[in-house]
Image (cartoon, rainbow, N blue to C red; front, side):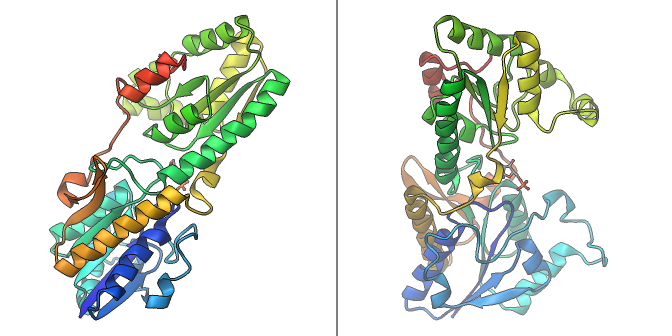
Length: 357
Ligand code: F6P
């Protein structure tokens, strides 16, 4: 008999259900006796023992369903060692739930913050297997996370739609793509959507260079320009500020987000009309794309295989076109970022795309 706890934590994304289905189907089909405890709303469910039993039928009909059948929440790692409002030690509570239910293993689906807590639970002696989810594709140890390709599709579609209206009106358009720290999503959607300028956190921009690109396009007869701007795009001046100075500056920030600031500054300097579109959480929503359905199913199935073999303490990831197991201690606390000199960035530049640098 294997007793498995499962939870999804952090911001949701497409294919969470597909991944859980991969684990569930693999386990139920193995012939081994299995009980699966689905903890509700992320680590909260594990802390407070809030779960529902997941049967074979719970994993049917969810391959194409967005969101997560277990619900999710953010439990910041920084606060995990702090007692809750009632003074409970959250880590101890999670351990108690695990031991009380006599679990053999936890399957945890999440991104960066989630992996720090998963690794902490491993250090505390629990058996843990994780699966890499996030539209940001910023998890260290895996070339790809599920959710990413689906989000690229949605952000690209948004840029595609903006293209037609931008060319009709001869305006500058900014599409703000998700990603506070890492620009994979903006870079890929920007390239796929034919953006003229791509601004990502890893490559601080110079507004004069951005404007020069817009003007160059006008001179060459293109009367519109599209910018794909990551939520966390940062100017060269701001990138020089210390964390403290930057925080201070943001206290008096008058724009809803960085795109609106860039828009205002472009208008101020060029007189051009600029419009901002923020697809926001639509990028995390809806049905997973076929790539993510297959990818998440494969990861889930490999996780099931590890559980059956009793191999714990790994994230199931993807490296050089192979599904691999990566030790959790190697993943936790590390961010995978776009290298400013990565081949894809160089190729984008050769296509004439400006990064404002
Ligand atoms: O971590 C995924 C992500 O969608 C980021 O791209 C985005 O910046 C953030 O979550 C938004 O978080 P929330 O849903 O908490 O607003």
